[in-house]
Amino acid sequence: DIQMTQSPSSLSASVGDRVTITCRASQNIRTYLNWYQQKPGKAPNLLIYAASGLKSGVPSRFSGSGSGTDFTLTISSLQPEDFATYYCQQSYTTSSITFGQGTRLEIK
Amino acid sequence: QVQLVESGGGLVKPGGSLRLSCAASGFTFSDYYMSWIRQAPGKGLEWISYISSSGNTLYYSDSVKGRFTISRDNAKNSLFLQMNSLRVEDTAVYYCARDLYSDSNVWFDPWGQGILVTVSS
Image (cartoon, rainbow over all chains, first blue to last red; front, side):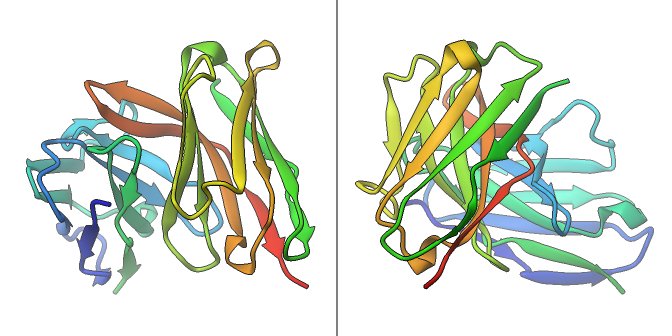
């Protein structure tokens, strides 16, 4: 299976900060990388697909980049509603889809 | 709007069985692949199975292969997960999700609200 490693595992930041979360794949996955946001007690919500595609309705402060093995999710100016856990997900091998372990974004 | 609603969860003893259902609405269910994804308490997300739009192609993670069976009824806009030989480590919130594709990239949108399955004696 392709292993997905996110860093950091947790992060404290303030409203208005610029935040970057990294996801590294154990092998080349081209741009088959997606990002989700999950709030406590809720289902995950898609933010970014195919590494950099912004889902319709998601605020433009969210952006994704990368290809191959290294990817980033950036929030340009944190808002109170952005404090959540973020997951990356690869689908290079569609018979074995895997997620990163998650990055918990907390209020400083 | 596009909606997925899971049902059928609960408490079951190790070795027991449970069948989860997922009712879809707001889209043409028969056009889409569907997946089950689970999340153990306090842990991350684990994809466990998907089924093609026709139901002819099925995939399972190694952790559930041989014990879980995914199926669908396109006439009733429903997805199912039959879980047999349940283990304590199968305790999790189970989500159904619609699969979206571009090239071979697959992502999940939307997700159901999730249903808790607890395996305990």
